[in-house]
Image (cartoon, rainbow, N blue to C red):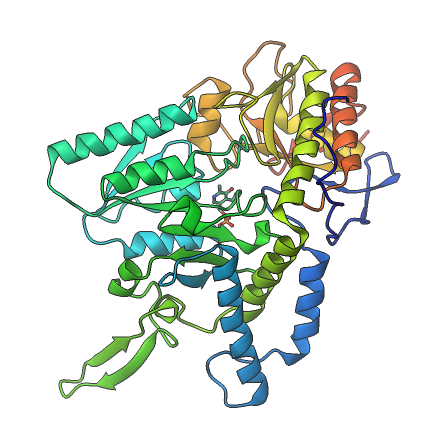
Length: 459
Ligand code: PMP
């Protein structure tokens, strides 16, 4: 354990809800839960929870009421927008649209693209950034999985050059994830943005996994839009963000038609209804806004800023080093990577264990150790299949509980992920549990029930 980076600039784990929750093990005893599935949903920051609780009595309708609490809530909603704009270091004319989450944000953007836009996305994307472009009359190019950041940039350059050589100018959009939800690897966003812009294309950054771990500066990365989810940023109150350029969003039909998006609605002489839509964020925020969700995101942005990303990143690097060192000592563990194990990553790592079905292994971590990880294909099927070394169809995300034979290819993977609230002890416990399971095997038999792998307690 000698190779950890210097501890000087790190911080303590941030206070999150659930850090003392005890869960029952299959044998009957209770242990403190080790939440190691941050990449799916991170626990709420205590600070976010406290801010929301303090505001809750003052909750009122937004943009509607004349009363004091309505005005207070409206102000808070708009201030939350400003806080997010500041957090993301948006440009002067950029706007923040509150959505439900990243999936919603990217679908909103897809719905707002000018007709005939060419879209480029790597096949390695999460389904949220892989699928929204399909079936809308857009011209979508999926780029093959690159094996290095340089290959990613070269592949985009080649695709843009080929499209430009073949046809006249068209609106173009590149979609890229900032950090993979499977490998945790950080993508060369700035370089991809520069390449896109050289061809007059725009770029949207899926920051669902990057924003909770790293500062995301729209100005510095020079991306046109960024999307992220509150529930991965320690603010699980049902809101997300799409932030960036206003022009395409203002020119598009509203994402949802209804109150809030419409400025005036009039009945015409011929019996039809004429609508003038708002410009700006309201155009795509029809319906009553999720003020608590937006306020929670703003609170998380403030908390992360105050803790300081330098310290948070330094601490996370220590945890990653600790995890990698621990897993490296277990030869049966194979870490999944596109760019190489030493490539910078956030606190997300997927792996397979030789001789084990991943669902079985994850179920044993939960039932016998109280450790919550995730198994499956992580809504990034093409990427995980590539990393597992097979292209054919995988039967189900849960897999079968039977151990695969030593040396046999796993059908799915295990993902461990953590963040600002994770104590060192959770990573240590995880590594010790992996080692014990590999060397001693599970203490219980497991079976599939309702598509899930569970300990067989019938005996
Ligand atoms: N993009 C990435 C990289 C993700 O990891 C996820 C969630 N796993 C999403 C998009 C979708 O986020 P949400 O489910 O919050 O819409």
